[in-house]
Amino acid sequence: MVLEHFISSAEAIALEDQYGAHNYHPIPVVLAKGEGVFLYSPEGVKYYDFLSAYSAVNQGHCHPKIIQALIDQAQTLTLTSRAFYNNRLGETEKFIAEFFGYDKVLMMNSGAEANESALKLARKWGYEKKKIPANQAVILAVGGNFHGRTLGIISASTDPSSTTNFGPFLPGFEILEYGNLEAMEKAIQNPNVCSVWIEPIQGEAGVMIPPAGYLKAVELLCKKYNVLFMIDEVQTGIARTGKLLASDHEGVRPDVLILGKALSGGVLPVSAVLADDEVMLVIKPGQHGSTYGGNPLACAVAVAALTVIKDENLAENAARLGEIFRARMTSLQEKRPDLITHVRGKGLLNAVVLNDSEEGSMGWDLCMLLAENGLLAKPTHGNIIRFAPPLVMTEAQMNDCCEIIEKVFVNFQI
Image (cartoon, rainbow, N blue to C red):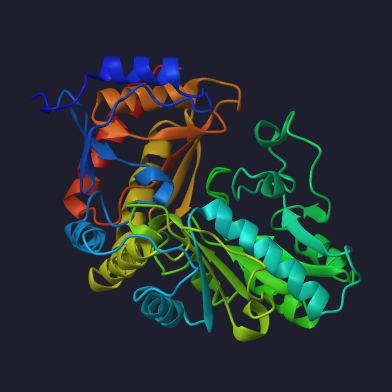
């Protein structure tokens, strides 16, 4: 079945190659339609989506309630800029603030913008509240992080693909080992430290989970030394890991919460920084902003996206299906210990680690075979395959997907 009104897959790939920047290396599959957990090529080939646009489509592709909110608002008012008030922003800020339990919300667009906003907020708080000497503020980051691609963000990156030939970098970051509490306790005693900046699970690094109790211990250290705890939940938040936030697994409430991706259900870029008054109100009019941040269209979509998460119990579904998935993958590991070295994850953010080097092709080869069998995933760091389907997946669909994965892995020749 060929989908009407679409160019062919070959034409789409050729056009991107000729006219687009070569800053991505996609699996050679062209997608033209999405519905729920499924994606379709222009030729009508049907795939299970096991990447969810890096967790942006937790609610499934083109969720009808989110799309309807988009259509209704798009026909009324889309953008005013913040030069004026609009009738959607205040009610949306109230909704998001109460949904996550904070005083204030700063709405932006991309996850990278939200992280950049959080960095500025932390520094300003450090100078005005903690009284750090001018231009001496330090932000503690951790190795293996991925918060975005801006120059400010990659100044704290340890990934050569993010940093090579992009310097010089922004000063004011100290990078610690992820999960190393001793190193954190030593570094945080520097009186110029204004914040600690962490992902509760490092998705891009290969679904790296810190030791149990690490996040809670860091939270207590931040309180002890008057330091802001900033948690980047752009990928891990919005029910992905079986809780509304991944930090909820340890009962942690960050001083600064950073959200994006599924905040819009994958419909358009919406991100947010949340904090209480004592932190957020250090930013005054004219000191930070975004033309599109908090636009009426984004507001309508964000409210609908979060309502779907709550009404459809997607965090609970992620927790339940994640247990099933990891059990099936652990059983698969027992069958192919020569191929699989680790299975890890929380909720529906999971990874299978392969017996290969980061420079090897095993992850790519397996993902190509998975695509041929109707399931889309993508390797990270060469030897890790991240599996993160939309949270609207059913148990029957999950078992069907596990059978596809098992078939490909069992028959794979090293």
